[in-house]
Amino acid sequence: MPHARQHAQTQTAQRRRHVAQEAARLMAEGGIDDYSQAKRKAASRLGMLDEASLPANREIEQALREYQRLFASPDHAGLLRSRRAAALQAMAFFADFSPRLAGPVLDGTADGQSSVQLHLHSDDEDAISRFLEDHHIPADPRTRRIRLDQARQADVTVWQLVADGVNFDLLVLPRQALRQAPLSAIDARPMARASASQLEALLAADVPIG
Image 1 (spheres, rainbow, N blue to C red):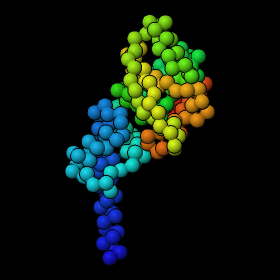
Image 2: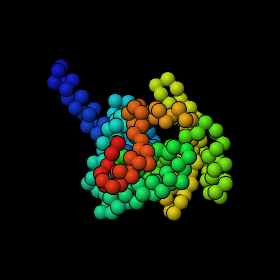
Image 3: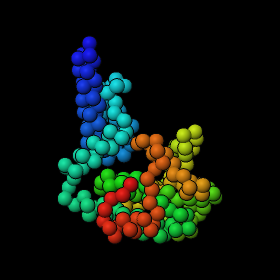
Image 4: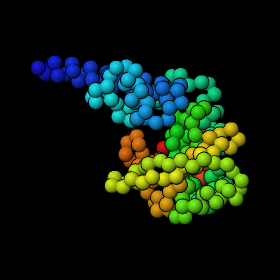
């Protein structure tokens, strides 16, 4: 019985790894930026739909990093640096809203299709809209549900725009979110974020953080 149990556990671990690897491939090659969507699509393609075969988001993130390490194009480092430089310029532009960089451009998993994800902070829900309008910047609003903490969720506005060929997602949060970042969909911990000064130091050192 112990041998049979160990064999079953090994098979389950292998299935989870296969789903994680396929989900990582879909994210890297197919432009999918949602872990749950990539996981479901990968499981469907592999015919592994049982709950035990579905990897955690952290497993997919690890598989994505490994995929990029093995298959990333030679210009990946340059692309990541250019995205971070674009983020720094945008953070200077939105300085009044205490911007923070989050997501793939910060953690190093960004590719050519990744958006620069900035968190902007204001207790005036219309402040970002007015700011964009005053500066004649076309942007489309979307709604995204996030977890503020273990007990609370909220639907927040995300302004999507393109500047100099780079896609930006501007997530509007209340000022109190400066003290505690929303929870990550990957591991349910506070998101890794960087201020403008931290990002500037990151670019100067040319090493990943987060």
